[in-house]
Image (cartoon, rainbow, N blue to C red; front, side):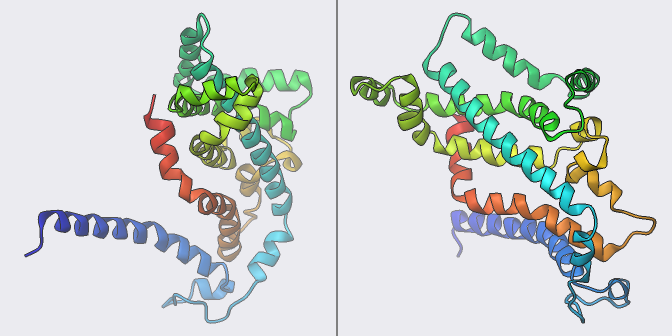
Length: 275
């Protein structure tokens, strides 16, 4: 007779396997379709594997404006994630280990920005960037994305630093380390899980962001991938080319997840639950 604990564990694994298949089947279908000729995609009955493997769809993708859109998204995401990681770790360290009069009020104001709909800021952002001359530039998309992602990242990093024992900080002070040295050499490595969580979440948020990009990038050369994809449709949908575009667009977030997967669960536990 199967024990209740073993039965529940088996049931959990069955549910997780079902969910994994549910999410993976569409991705595998799209991936395989990206290697099929156009006529084979609409063939009845369809086959799972392509009868004729071809890279023609990927050739058409790189022959379009995809390369420029992809490059814009990479620049915006990489620079935005770096800024969010650095600024949130500095701010989180300050709120956790260097409290000052009114720090709780400032933190409350930062948290309060999470409740304000983004759409309220779109018109002021557009006017401000137009006056500053950074409309339709990568910088004009990096700064708003950083501002949107920073409040939640600060909360994660603050919780990560709070979980670090005070004795470690005191030992660094006794060794003569200054504030920046304590932050960089002692505290930041110990808050690695929080940093990983911030990097992964910010990458997903900026890479897939559409609202800001649609408002602040009106010229095609300045568009990131999320907005530029709407211009790649053409007069008739080419589903093989569309599948190739989707595969290439999904690749960076998947690689980021695979690279940091060891730290994601522990980062959620240490950075999002504590504090």
